[in-house]
Every structure is written in structure tokens, then in C-alpha cells.
Figure: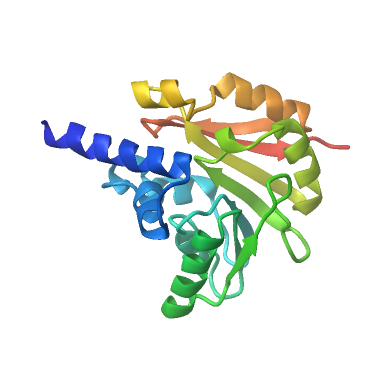
Length: 211
């Protein structure tokens, strides 16, 4: 089998295992982090596009194994704060352990509820979610309620699969960009900007509508 196709197949198999809920934390880590994920996720470009400032507070919604969490922690610096938000206790324990090992004291792990991220503190400047949007139920209500966690001028960044490829279409592991835009508008946001450099995903940033 072609090496690229082989890597993609392995990633999809592990993703399916996660979806079925039959794998351990280590296998979930492989699914979340992917095989050679950096080659298509372009994390440095994502961080740059978000224009993160030192001292900001960020909620990584659906943080998984911390792929973006640790990068955010470095971007906001020691005076900033990153909330690693996930409903998976195993992944949360892993991120908490790795944060301690690496000395990143600006990471706080939150075990969220399915309908509420339960973000602590006095609000965040950015709610970021990658490959999680399609898993959320009643997304309009979810993000309408999430507005209470955003500081004035706060944004929501959504990266989700664009549906290219048989796996994503069969298992519905994607959300069309027009659906995301419509739902977020219904929740009280407007599209601020979008980026097209991710080959497998949409990348949209929303701002709050003025009340």
C-alpha cells in the first residue's frame, strides 16, 4: 500500500476506535494526535492566524491529548491561562500529568459536561475547538450559552473536518462550513474571518454580535 494512504488508513482506524469507545487512553492519543498530523494540521500557521497575545486566556474546547493546549500555553506565556476542556476523564488526566511534567503551570484542566464547558475564572478571550464541533449536540444552544464565558471582544475559533474523503462522509465526522456559519449566527455571532490553508478542515473565527 502507498505509504501516505497507509498512514491515512491507520489514522482513520484509530479514529473509528475512539468513536466506538473501545480503546484505551494510549490509542485515543494516537487518534487525536494522528499520524504525522503536523503535516496537514499546520499548527504553527493556526497559532499565527489566531493572533494570540501574551497574557490572554484561552479555552481549548475538546482538548483531547493537548495537541493545541500546550501550544496555546506557550503562546500566552506564564501570565496567561489555558483551560483544557474535555469530557474524557482519561484524556484530562493525561493532559494534567503532561502539563505538570513540562512545568506549564498556566494550564488548568476542566472536566466538562456534554452541554456546558464549565469554564472557570472571569472569562476567556478565545474559545477554540478543533475536530470537536461535529460531536456537539444542539450546537446553537451550546454556543448561545457559551457567550457567558467570553470576555468583551472575545472570539470563537472553529476548526472542523470539511468532509473530503469517504471516512468522514460515512461516519459524519465533518460539518459543512455553511452549516457552521448558520448555526453560529443563530447563536449570536458573526463570521469575522476564515482561512483556507488547511487541506482537510474549515477554519472559521466568529465574534459576538452586539447586544
